[in-house]
Length: 280
Image: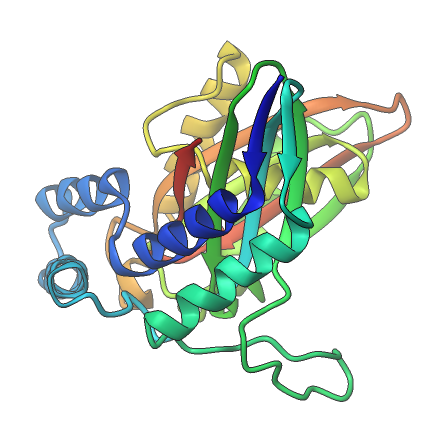
């Protein structure tokens, strides 16, 4: 059994929130540069150059990649051989988020009640997901997600007889409705299976996987490629002004489901999809 003070988790969450907001993930930056080489539209090329320059300036000057510094989701894989001490885990995580948003002068966007809407002024509470894993390590991933793209996400309970084409058509419908409003080029996290709520959870976890690391199952790898091709044929392009690059990547995560259903969730994420992770 390994004992770990929750203060270490608090410090790690602070570090990761700052990194995620200041440093665009390497896989996304690489995808933007690859898209720039493939684009033929001068307008699209100029916009991609601006996004790449924006990422470089944010990293150099330690300022936010995007003014919407997001609602923070924290994913924790807690080793079964880890004994936490020194306080409450959820409190440590939220204190870590609060510390980061104060130190980094990041915009605080969370309201304490969805109807009354008074700002908490701490960017907390965060959404915390905990999974128990084998071993004595704690793996922490943070995902500060803006709501320009979050508002364009959707879920649909398809019939169990639905085909892969039906899934693709639903994703295309979601992207068409999003249009330019979610700040494309997009990264699409897609959850298939489970229940209504778990499909949405899967779609969020899918965004943590780097672009280019395909699903482990062949038929889902093919589905990822087919969706990406179909989405990029829409011509929405960077920031909705036309071009070949409507999406940079499509990640699918799946889970067993009930014989009577086929839940499909699409989390739309913008060009500034942010996440960072660390293992303690």
